[in-house]
Image (tube, rainbow, N blue to C red; front, side, top):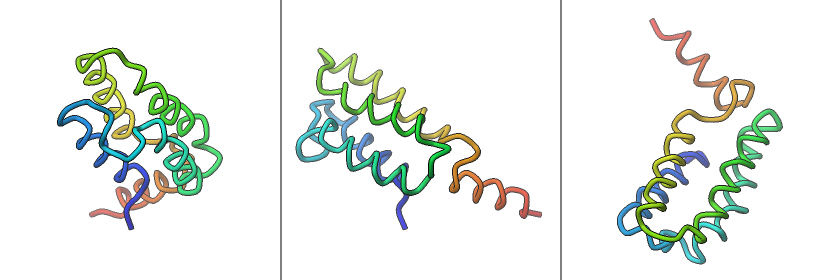
Length: 103
């Protein structure tokens, strides 16, 4: 199953080809609500402020004035996604369990 982080990462990599806000139909502003809903369901209430911060940045993307500014925004979002939600969120717990179970 593809996680919300994986989906958004793929979308942002596609957006990084031209920075025209066309990676998804309607732009990132339209996708923000979908992503927020999926991420809240996947990560639970412990991650709600993190999810909201990512969604807010997606909503602000279309207002950015030029490709250079959008490039920085995409890079920052990708870094945020790589860091992931707070440790109390369910999928982060799974990753921690896998790491401690490894030999």
